[in-house]
Length: 279
Image 1 (tube, helix red, strand yellow):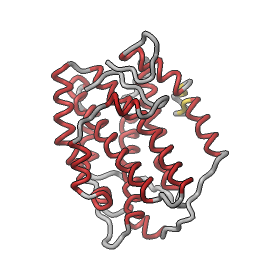
Image 2: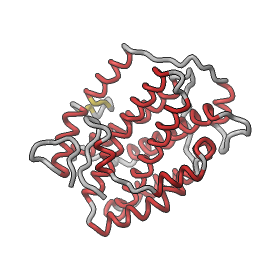
Image 3: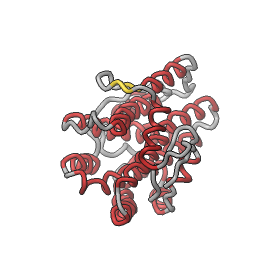
């Protein structure tokens, strides 16, 4: 077990719940809000950031609707498309989970996790809006839809390793997009800093989700979770053509094959991440 933020004597799932209450504040299920996340957004509203770069709106929207990007797009546009399409996958998962009533209101940890996912779709849209572009909501790629439907339609005790695998893949992909975005827009320090801030908000949550799922599994389940991550997670990333185009298959493979140290990742984001268990 690891408690990244030193919750006194609390550890594991109890420590994670205490961390969520401290970080998120009061949940409002009807409004899909967490009080301290709303305060975070209020602070951002008082410190607006906008890129001076201009991107062709029609090119962006046309490629957002395509399965594969048109030839000749530069790395900046590909990164924006990858971010927007990750948002589509997040929104699809959130919507389907709500449709099937997967938010358990008598489990405070799951209430927080479910509401966090709503904020992730909002945050990813905000990343794209830094560049004056909208995010139109469309179904994600077939592979993402299949995994989401499998997770939601399978009894929980069987789906947990797959849930953990998808959360691990999310961490790797979000870290890659964060690092790539910071590098691409390094000539605009305020924009690069806002990209880091927004992606780190998501990463803190996703790292916590990995640790939480791991805490629900025994040794065999965690082994399966790691194995699925190495095989299925990498294939899922390869099904994102914009991500492949901007990062390259070798870099994606390197990131997925690296040791997944959830405790070290949590330590990189003090105040934002908590690992209830290692994998």
